[in-house]
Each structure stands twice: as C-alpha cells, then as structure tokens.
Image (cartoon, rainbow, N blue to C red; front, top):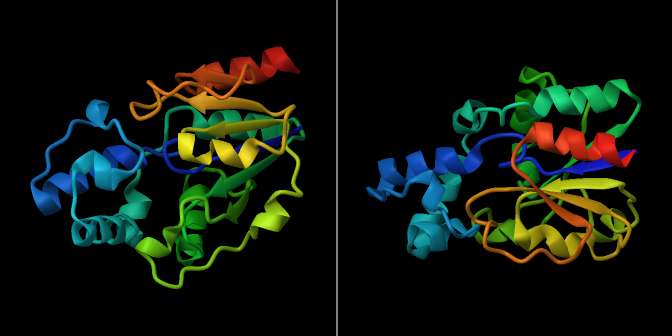
Length: 201
C-alpha cells in the first residue's frame, strides 16, 4: 500500500509550538485547544506583518527541530515501512526548509520515508519566491491507498482519488468541519490510525 502523510500536526506538534511563539512575540495567549482556525493569522488575530513574522520564526532551523513528535507517529510509520508499504510525506512547507525537515525526520527515525514539498497553501505569502519540489501535475499522477491529513484546506487534493481512505487527524481546527464523504474517518491518535489501516487491509 501507499500512504500520503502530512507533516505538520500529523507527525509533529507544530500548532502547539506556534501558540508559544505567538505568546512570546505578540503577547497573544491562545490555548492550543482554542485554536479554531487552520489559518493562524485568523486564529491569533494577527496583522499581515505579524503573521509574516510568526511564520518566519516558526520556520527557523532551531524552531523546526524543536517540534515534538506526535505520540506514536514514528512507530506506526516504521511498522508500515517494515511491512513493505510506501510512506510518502507530502508537506506544504516550502522547499527552503528541506534540509532541516529531513534532519527532523532522521532524528525521529523516519529517514526511510519519502519527503515531498507541495504548494498546498500558497506559501509565497510569507516566503517570497519559495519553491516546491513536487509540481501539482506530478502530484495528481500519484496514487495512494490512505491519506493522513489534519487540514480541511488540503482535502481538495484528494478529489481525484475517489477510492482513497482519508484518516483525518482530529485537531481543534477541524472538529467542527463536516467531512466530505464516507471515506473520511476521524482519528484521535496514531493508534486509532493504525487500527483503521489494519482493519481495512
């Protein structure tokens, strides 16, 4: 089988770190459980300038390396790889953070997973001229059996795969969203994801 796996907030606790950054930089104190918008500019009620500073800070090397692993992520992914499945991490991060992202994966035992950078969210808004190593036309030629994703904004990237099973990693910003179809299943943690895949094989 082939897996699509999102990076931020599926493999690591990115949004939790951003709540700390927003508090430190702008005195914006928003508990993680109250982050109701995937768009952090809306979540923290930031100006354009503040939002750009937030994103730049959150993508500095030492900050990216400090993100905590989402519990169970590396164990489940390595189990799938050991079973002969292909794990593709499809991230909306800009390609400029490729090296540090690969380093994070290696430090968490995920160096065997493939890593692709796809412009899911129009990241030029905070990294001018940013590049991505996976073009949309090439992505749409890829086939997956399962996708693990937290962002409702990314669901549109699954429309061409009607048989795809999408395991939605439940986060505060997607709990109130209606899921697009019966092939979308909410999962609260990696053990639930593992069980869904094991039951569907």
